[in-house]
Length: 268
Image (tube, rainbow, N blue to C red):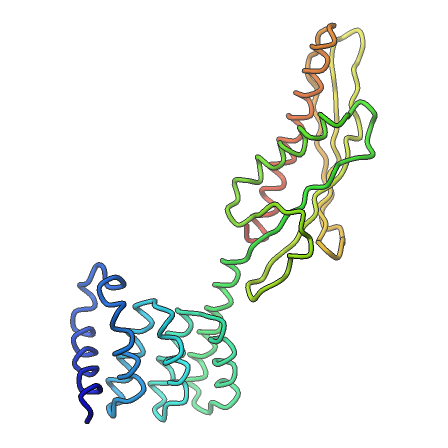
């Protein structure tokens, strides 16, 4: 037995003994991934190899992924099963293809089950990491009273509502959507101010905003909604302008709540 393998075996035994009482295991033992990888691939005892595969998954260091992928070809089914489990925890671009390849040639039902569980875990990670890209349109084509300043206020109000979602990113670069391994969703939010009226005699301003959400770049509409409000307005021009702004903000706030609910359902 080589000195390197012997040293790795001692490390595996030590880690297996004290792992449950280590609070900072990832920090304290991250530098031992190389030794664990050697033990996983070279130790003659399948029990040591199983423990090494287990600990590589628990340490959470992705540098152990390559060794775990190689261990999927181990002659012992317990080692293959544990390597699959740990790959399901670590992830990485090469983990899923390696697991699928093993599933296609694996004859042991227990190992096959562990592979399927690992692949399911990787899919769950992708959903958690999924990014949502949102483009907010110009909201043009509505009533004339909805000038550029009010449309800008509408867009800003919607942005402020959606900024509560950490996985949502605002972008105008529609060509960037859908790239990369991590699933990405692109959406376009647009619509118009369909009504903005001042009711003379009672000093009231009412408004309504129609909003759509469409997939991007397919532009298939998946949501239509609207919101309206009415606020008191004075007789001065400045009071009327403030009433319009308050009406747009109130309606945009309602739409923002609807959008939050929708994008949370999309994983945001």
